[in-house]
Length: 209
Image (cartoon, rainbow, N blue to C red; front, side, top):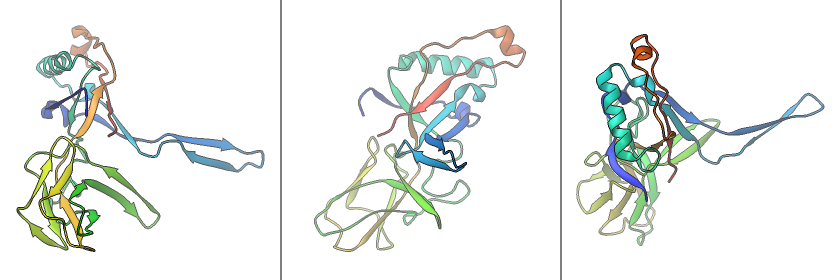
């Protein structure tokens, strides 16, 4: 991913950030009173407000320093979503069978990490491009595989030295960050307003792989 710094937004601030996934839906109201809905985006895109995580002048300074080091909107960076940051739910532990990432064919060696959100009504498969180094675990047909594979923490691609057997199910578990960038090139700070409880708006937007 070009124009990207493999550094994480300050975690202490990120835990208080507001935001989440966003969709773009077009709704047409018909003359009959009915409506037609069309999803204009294939993927969701996450947006956050980092300002809501700022609790002190020290936090504010840390965010401003991070903003300067990224050149405003110029360089992307890693961000931990305060709710959705693992291959499983936030209150359970990662396992190697959390997410199916592909089916072996005896030839294919590379498998991209994905996370599936699904229920009886439908589902969505999200590409995970920024796994946390050292957090990824892998299994083939339910059996953990501790060696013979590598993962690129900058792209989220798992590569096996020997291709998994045909028809085998490849699964993985992991922690991950969201690739984002600042959505502004200016941060307005008013300390008198900050002391009165008003915090600056510092929008972040997801960079889709």
